[in-house]
Length: 123
Image: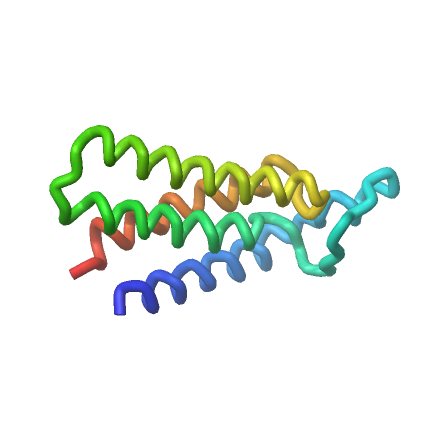
Protein backbone atom coordinates (compact mmCIF):
# COMPACT_ATOMS: atom_id res chain seq x y z
CA UNK A 1 0.00 0.00 0.00
CA UNK A 2 2.85 2.37 0.81
CA UNK A 3 4.39 1.99 -2.65
CA UNK A 4 1.06 2.48 -4.44
CA UNK A 5 0.60 5.77 -2.59
CA UNK A 6 4.22 6.68 -3.31
CA UNK A 7 3.81 6.08 -7.05
CA UNK A 8 0.51 8.00 -7.13
CA UNK A 9 2.05 10.98 -5.34
CA UNK A 10 5.11 10.93 -7.59
CA UNK A 11 3.02 10.86 -10.79
CA UNK A 12 0.74 13.64 -9.50
CA UNK A 13 3.68 15.96 -8.79
CA UNK A 14 5.41 15.11 -12.06
CA UNK A 15 2.31 15.88 -14.13
CA UNK A 16 1.47 19.00 -12.13
CA UNK A 17 4.99 20.44 -12.40
CA UNK A 18 5.20 19.76 -16.15
CA UNK A 19 1.87 21.56 -16.67
CA UNK A 20 2.81 24.51 -14.46
CA UNK A 21 6.38 25.11 -15.66
CA UNK A 22 6.04 24.15 -19.35
CA UNK A 23 9.74 24.42 -20.23
CA UNK A 24 10.70 22.74 -23.50
CA UNK A 25 13.29 20.05 -23.96
CA UNK A 26 16.74 21.15 -25.17
CA UNK A 27 16.23 20.21 -28.81
CA UNK A 28 12.91 22.08 -28.95
CA UNK A 29 14.60 25.46 -28.56
CA UNK A 30 17.98 24.91 -30.24
CA UNK A 31 18.44 23.47 -33.74
CA UNK A 32 22.07 22.60 -32.88
CA UNK A 33 20.99 19.85 -30.46
CA UNK A 34 20.13 16.57 -32.14
CA UNK A 35 18.28 14.22 -29.79
CA UNK A 36 18.85 10.49 -29.72
CA UNK A 37 15.33 9.97 -28.41
CA UNK A 38 12.38 12.16 -29.31
CA UNK A 39 9.49 13.18 -27.07
CA UNK A 40 7.05 16.04 -27.54
CA UNK A 41 6.20 16.51 -23.85
CA UNK A 42 7.53 19.34 -21.75
CA UNK A 43 10.90 18.64 -20.17
CA UNK A 44 10.87 20.20 -16.72
CA UNK A 45 11.14 18.30 -14.40
CA UNK A 46 12.66 15.17 -15.87
CA UNK A 47 10.04 12.47 -15.46
CA UNK A 48 12.49 9.60 -15.80
CA UNK A 49 14.75 11.09 -13.15
CA UNK A 50 11.82 11.80 -10.86
CA UNK A 51 10.39 8.28 -11.16
CA UNK A 52 13.65 6.39 -10.79
CA UNK A 53 15.04 8.58 -8.01
CA UNK A 54 11.82 8.35 -6.01
CA UNK A 55 11.83 4.57 -6.14
CA UNK A 56 15.58 4.18 -5.51
CA UNK A 57 15.64 6.56 -2.54
CA UNK A 58 12.47 5.02 -1.08
CA UNK A 59 13.89 1.52 -1.36
CA UNK A 60 17.13 2.71 0.26
CA UNK A 61 15.25 4.36 3.15
CA UNK A 62 13.07 1.30 3.66
CA UNK A 63 16.08 -1.02 3.64
CA UNK A 64 18.19 0.87 6.17
CA UNK A 65 15.40 2.13 8.45
CA UNK A 66 14.15 -0.98 10.20
CA UNK A 67 17.27 -3.10 10.05
CA UNK A 68 20.38 -2.87 12.13
CA UNK A 69 22.91 -2.21 9.40
CA UNK A 70 26.53 -1.44 10.05
CA UNK A 71 28.11 1.79 8.88
CA UNK A 72 29.85 -0.10 6.09
CA UNK A 73 26.59 -1.62 4.83
CA UNK A 74 24.91 1.78 5.07
CA UNK A 75 27.64 3.47 3.04
CA UNK A 76 27.64 0.71 0.40
CA UNK A 77 23.86 0.99 -0.01
CA UNK A 78 24.07 4.77 -0.10
CA UNK A 79 26.83 4.60 -2.73
CA UNK A 80 24.85 2.19 -4.91
CA UNK A 81 21.77 4.42 -4.65
CA UNK A 82 23.73 7.59 -5.44
CA UNK A 83 25.52 5.96 -8.39
CA UNK A 84 22.23 4.67 -9.79
CA UNK A 85 20.56 8.08 -9.49
CA UNK A 86 23.57 9.84 -11.03
CA UNK A 87 23.68 7.42 -13.96
CA UNK A 88 20.00 8.03 -14.76
CA UNK A 89 20.54 11.79 -14.57
CA UNK A 90 23.63 11.63 -16.77
CA UNK A 91 21.89 9.46 -19.36
CA UNK A 92 19.02 11.95 -19.72
CA UNK A 93 21.46 14.79 -20.37
CA UNK A 94 23.65 12.65 -22.65
CA UNK A 95 20.66 11.65 -24.80
CA UNK A 96 19.76 15.37 -25.14
CA UNK A 97 16.35 14.70 -23.61
CA UNK A 98 16.86 17.16 -20.74
CA UNK A 99 19.10 19.94 -19.55
CA UNK A 100 21.11 19.69 -16.34
CA UNK A 101 18.70 21.90 -14.41
CA UNK A 102 15.74 19.74 -15.48
CA UNK A 103 17.29 16.52 -14.17
CA UNK A 104 18.46 18.20 -10.95
CA UNK A 105 14.96 19.60 -10.40
CA UNK A 106 13.41 16.16 -10.98
CA UNK A 107 15.91 14.60 -8.57
CA UNK A 108 15.25 17.21 -5.88
CA UNK A 109 11.49 16.72 -6.08
CA UNK A 110 11.99 12.96 -5.93
CA UNK A 111 14.13 13.11 -2.80
CA UNK A 112 11.59 15.39 -1.08
CA UNK A 113 8.70 13.07 -1.99
CA UNK A 114 10.65 10.02 -0.78
CA UNK A 115 11.60 11.63 2.52
CA UNK A 116 8.09 12.91 3.17
CA UNK A 117 6.45 9.59 2.35
CA UNK A 118 8.97 7.66 4.43
CA UNK A 119 8.67 9.87 7.50
CA UNK A 120 4.99 10.79 7.42
CA UNK A 121 2.96 8.19 5.61
CA UNK A 122 4.70 4.87 6.06
CA UNK A 123 2.97 2.81 8.76
